[in-house]
Image 1 (cartoon, one colour):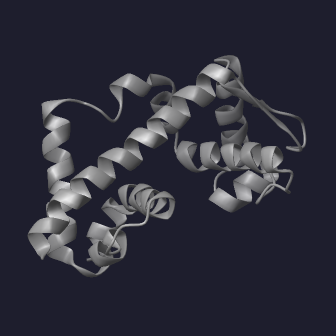
Image 2 (cartoon, helix red, strand yellow):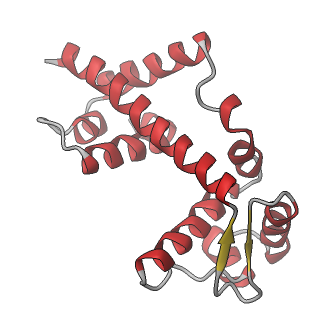
Length: 167
């Protein structure tokens, strides 16, 4: 079960986000966390769909390119969390300084610098010196939000299909 939960960590997070926005009659993510068979069926259905058509990566090449770095996805998540926090007028949940990100994700400051420099060079986003503010390109933000919405929808649709068979 621990292995399934690790493999399913990201899809479970998207399913939980979907359920937060539109609560299910029965909480599917919580059920899958306790049911190895259901979780395996759900992840297997997702893999089968991927074999038919790559809905995860091909349409979102910029997000995928950045997350290809070791800790790229967590760094991207931290940057976007800071962006959304600023829009809401609240403090960022974590510091975006090289040192703060390096400590949080247990990588070197140089590695964090490489990720952030790559994102800036490609025009995705920039983090000011010291990590106090973030500027994200509208195109990259749209790609990320579309990717995230599709991940939520994909996870939810497959979960509903599998959940019916569990009853």
